[in-house]
Length: 103
Image 1: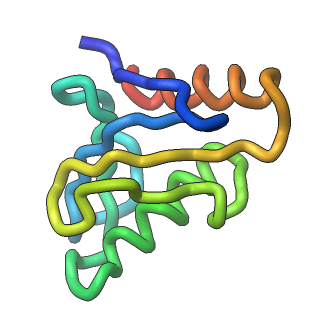
Image 2: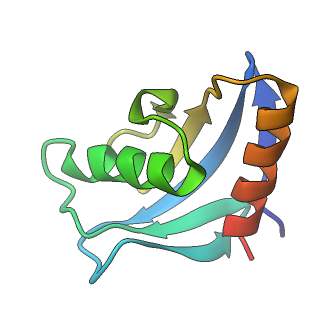
């Protein structure tokens, strides 16, 4: 099943399955339509969420402020929104990058 990416409110929304306390930060393919991401931070006091937002921002080439965790703050499955600063061209490039995470 490919990663499910939706265009909404001028940005992209997709699901992420997070594995905290990993050996290193990395994307690890797809699981049930969500991007699998391993994060070194522990799931304590929002540290893993902060690390996830920073990791995704770095990998997608957007500012940290452009990545928002919309739902799932305390669970492994999270819905993430990325708001690009550019137009439709940048949105299409971001969508391709997110889909590539699932490969």
